[in-house]
Image (cartoon, rainbow, N blue to C red):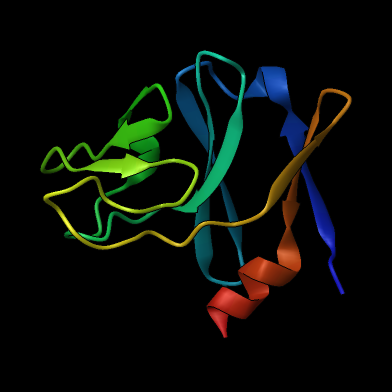
Length: 110
């Protein structure tokens, strides 16, 4: 059963930035790009664990601040030639509110 967490208003996430939600020992980065699309990934680069929430958002990607890996926001996967994926979590927008699927976060924490 899906349980949704009301994260914030979309305006509370900086455009081309992120906001971090902590739940069940997992840090989830909720990103907003220039087109006001919203994505949720574990706040951990698959390369060396860098904080993706502190990276640079461009298009539908974020660049890890530690070593410059580019991660696809809609899948969590590194852009070739790099390999690996950050966990992606379901997110939805209702009105201007951003909602995160807590069941998916709980499953990742288990």
